[in-house]
Length: 295
Image: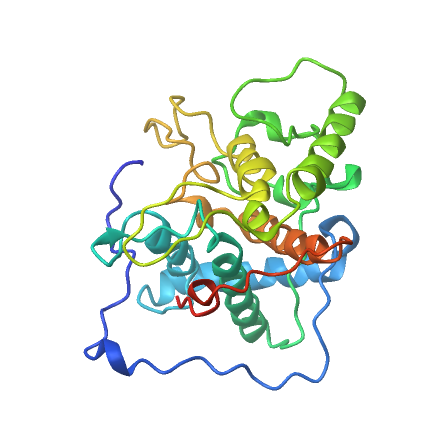
C-alpha cells in the first residue's frame, strides 16, 4: 500500500520473453567477506562513497539503471504488484522466494557499488541486529547531510536506542538490557526452535498460479519488525507534509530508498548462512519449483 509514485518502477518488457539470456557468474578468485557495520569503518566509507555516486546519477542521468532510485525500484517492482505471472500478482515476500530473491538483489547491488567506486572486491557491511553490539541504528545513518541519512525514520531510532526485534508498533516499557535479552531469546526461537526444517525457515512453497502468504520464521520476525521499527509511524506526517504509510523502511514500495535497507538485508542473508550451519538434518530446499525459480 501507499501513495502512487510519479515514475514507473518497471524496466521495459523485452521484445522476446523467451530469449532472455541467463546470467553467468563471473570467475571468483577470493570470496568477499562482509563485516558488521560497527567494525567496518573502511567498508562504511566505501559504502558512503558508492551511495553518493549512485545518488549523483539521479541528477545527471535519470534513465541510468545504476541510479539510486532505480535500484530501489527493483524492490518496488517485485513486491508491490507490478508484475503478474500465471494470472496472479507476483510477490516475493511471504514464501520460500524471500531469501533467494533478496540474496540476488544484494549480490548485484554490491557489484554495482564496487563498479562505481572502482573496487571490485567491495563487500556490503551488515547491520547485525542479532547481536547486542548491533541492536541499534548504526550511527553513520544518523548524520544529517550524509548520503546515508534518511529523514523518513521513526524518531525512536536515534541516539543509540536499543531496537525491539519483535516490534509491530507498540513500544515496550522495559530496560535496554532487558530488551537486548528479549531480542536474543527471540533470535534463538526463530533460528532454532521454530525452524527445524527448510519450509518453516524459508516459508511456504510458491509455484505458478498460487497466491501464498506464509513467511518463514526470519522473514516474519525479526525481519518485518526491523522494517517497521525503522520507518516512520503510519498515520504521522512526513517531512514533506504528506501522510505516512511507514516510509521508507516500513513500506515495500519505498524501503529501498533508505540506504540502511541494504545493510539490513546483508544481515538477513547472513541468517540463511548461519541457519545452514546449525546441526541436524537442516539443508536447503530441494524441490525443483524452488531450484528453478528465476527473477
